[in-house]
Length: 147
Image (cartoon, rainbow, N blue to C red):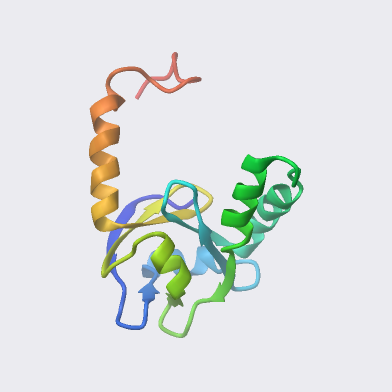
């Protein structure tokens, strides 16, 4: 289970060093990971074994539905299979860096089965917006939820 948030730096070549505690679980099941775009403007980083059923479901969506086609274009079209190098880094391609407007500082945010990668400024803006509405009402399905 991937959890926690880490502020990390992209190096000059666009490489991102995955925190040591996440390297083995992330590369389990063969060592490959999948990096792709998300409609919210961030990137998603999955272990390949966790991505495969998701990618298959997205590809099975109807190509006659305009919204489904855009999900396919984003999620499958941008998907890149990568290996962590000997230093635990992944190379974020120029296309994905451009899509997510990644500069030097990024946030790696655990989401259970995967990570989101955000430009730090975009993350702070989204977090501020989310906090402004978080107290107004709980999300659907959490009406009886307690912390």
